[in-house]
Amino acid sequence: MTTSQANNPLGPGYDNVPGSVKRFRDIFRDTLKAEMLRDDDVFLMGEDISGGFDRDTKEPLDAWGGPFAATKGLVQEFGPERVRDAPISEAGFVGAAIGSALTGMRPVVDLMYFDFVTVAFDQLLSNAAKSRYMFGGQTRVPLTLFARSGAGTGHAAQHSESFYSMLAHIPGLKVVVPSDPYSVKGLLAAAIRDDDPVFLINDKKLINLDGFVPDEDYVIELGKGRYLRRGADVTLVGMSYTSVVCQKAAEQLAEIGIDAEVIDMMSLSPFDEDILIESVKKTNNVVIVDEDTPRASMSSEFAAVIADKAFDYLDAPVKRVTAPHSPVPYNRELEQAFMPQPADVVGTVKNLLARE
Image 1: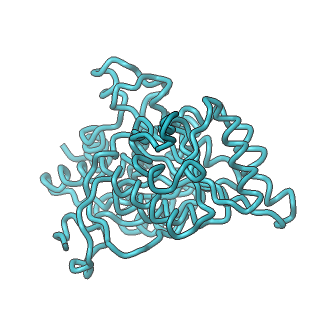
Image 2: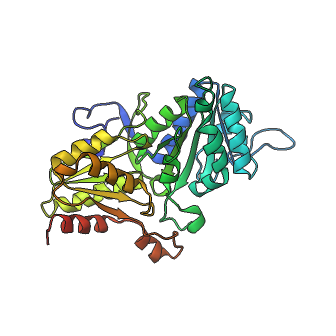
């Protein structure tokens, strides 16, 4: 099955690539399955991802695959040795996963909510990220972790954060943020095959998003961004769900005669400085959209790189659209106001370009 160019993230010239429209959560699970079939060393670990076994028959139960159904059905196919339920101790099972990676396995850890990173931070900072460096390159840590971030789904302050920059700050830990079904397939496969620890962050608002996915096996190079839309008047920089926000804003801007270019960063550590500079040199204006709070955020880092390496090309200051410096509210109206919206981006662009 092929799809129209409007739904094809591969760009011009790829209209006839074999593929189909799939839901984000489904292609995520399919990619986990494909990587487990490809490499017997890949196994999964996390809370409630298996469902356990019937005490009498010893047959696997109809596992729900965790609260986001990311691993649903995999225990039936691969068994409890490769789909392992973990106790409610992120520090404990992340540490165990690091140990298994050091001995040659390729663990994939479901941390459920991104906020739970803090519970396992010592393991990530002191062990996963530093082992290769501290042992002079004699070790490797092929560990993949994933979790769900983002406000907008009523999960309240302790289950809705997007502090990507906390992880991107750690040398030795790679951080990727897919924004659609196409990118999650390529980034997840690349992360699992990588010999260094990679943290993949899924925004909860993307889970039911549909998009075109090629049938072929592919990976997306870690550390690269991509153009989602070409334009001449202003660069909109997004990451994870804010790339969707940028696309919606670009469509609204086009209706008033503003030609916006949209960049999807995809990787936050390392990140693609070249695509930022290339686009700003063309449009001379930039707005960075980030759901994280503004202090010491990825938007701050992108702005610093642009100011350092493309300052002479700017017609106006770098602008950012971020969440406020506040925890995520639970009240639905406040939660919607907390998140960057397309209207916020449109208003910022109009002010930047001095358009009424």
